[in-house]
Length: 489
View 1 (cartoon, rainbow, N blue to C red):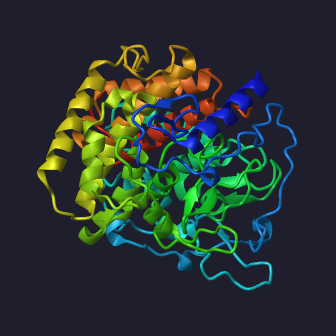
View 2 (view 1 turned 180 degrees about the horizontal axis):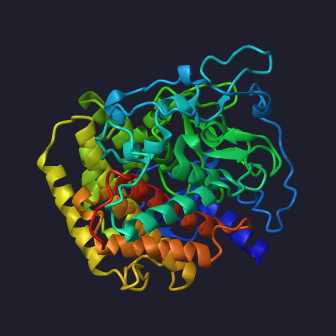
């Protein structure tokens, strides 16, 4: 069966490369047909498609051979340097809201010197752009405006239910941090998910389970091999991220991960001898905007990185005029529940675009009033279809396609809860429905064994990440000591 799968997949790639009025897209799933693929749009090129026969996740925790770094790129095991607090700085006061420095340096490791021993001046520490680890999610959500650190103790006047919930979330996230992730068995897709959850604090063991811990975003940005795969490739004069099994599954997914972690535009990327930066990946995604394709992750990435009015309008590689407004408009008129994962990525992208618009002080147009109203309607829709136990059923959420098994419920509930934890107004975060959803996710994660150290499928791993990221966002927006309500749910 596995050989048949790969033979079919290779045949699928041939269809992609030959084009046609109806092409196929690997952006979501190799068997998902993209009937509205524009006839004039260039189909994905061979160098962007991941190898169909590449190394798989070793189900037995096996011995995928380690391949050397690219020519001209130093082995990160030899290049780790721990930054000091004095080396960390805030790249954008506008983006962070001026959070205070944390006392303990928990910044990720930086990639250092090259093979000749010369210091790579571009290999900046990602951690210096994540100014306060405890508040990273609040900054990322672009919602928190508090400038004072959280109080160390919970006020005694708070209801015990909320304090107990906050402690369970804290313990669960602490346990999740201990999950073993390494570059031998985990693909670039897995590491993107891990970085989605922990941002600039994400780490993985390099070369195998016993390897030295290295910053995940540095691994991905410097194109080191993960499960014998390299994420980045040079394409049409720009750096791009590959599609396919073990790589991106959505257009612009890597750029969205970088935006979610607030990695700055001048952070270096590396493909062979070339040393572009994140801004080059931003330019690539701008050039390859296309009508008729799902571009939720592209919208997230560009909404974060295009900070000035001059940057928000451009021409794609076909000479068509594009803008952030057009990208928002196309996502807005696309049916939500026909999108990937029941449209939850699209809803998050639209919510994120509204918040970035405000944070960047860009001109506010009626389009964004329409988006804000639309998001509010879907929030009410989601809360109205929540089960009594706080979960969401894929059979009720049309188009989710996650199945009614435990994993399908975890995935959809995690996605819905994550979006609501990000997008709900502060006054609605402490309602009974969010309380129950938090309880449900905590119970399912523990009783379902999802936090144990074991082999996982890519779908299970991403489902786990979505649920944990929702809990992390909710912790930072609703369960901090200064935000807990006094009344019980």
